[in-house]
Length: 305
Image (cartoon, rainbow, N blue to C red):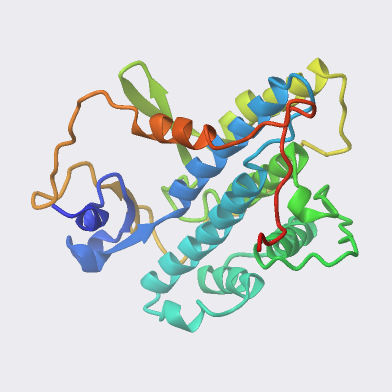
């Protein structure tokens, strides 16, 4: 079997299912924000642990940008999920919205679901989301050019590509605020992302808001305290809970997960213990000539004639 074929195995994928529209793929919508949220959470924890375990210098994290990027992906996918479900319910074409700006898609969610938006816009979450989008664009489009970026509603780095744990936690807070605000807009559903947690030889899921309070926040503050550091970051998220939409009833939408492999895409791995990557890296390391006085090299960007 080709490795490419395994990409069609959707085990573990989550869908919004509309029972009144049938019981096949035409009655389901793929939901991706839980996947991005799980990635964002674990990258965030990895970054905070690197700060905690700093030795010679303060380790500001080697996956900061990855963590922040996945939090933004999670937010955008969450808003798109809200909009896709609304479009599916009201027989609207999501393609009419997919090319619009994030704020316009958010506005469409309020309009289609007929939800009052005053409390949300008064909460101050939207200006933070806009600054998050600016930060993300600076990094992902490599727009930095000497002058620093000014942020007024958030604690994002004015030099975005030099992000550290503060940026990671700031991103996680904005994501939490968005998730919390729209958590119960669909009757009978709780849309707060469930995070995959390993336990012994099995696993379970815990809601992200609980993990923010019980893992991310205490880990961040304990790591700061350990190294006699502090922060200006406001870590208390804005709490707002929008009302349920009246355009549908409980049971009109359900969240389901595919728990089994597709029968034609099953391939068992070879369980032999190997360590190919480490062996290859050791060979590469042998090619490095160490400067015994400096104990490190510098990059060589001059062309060798």
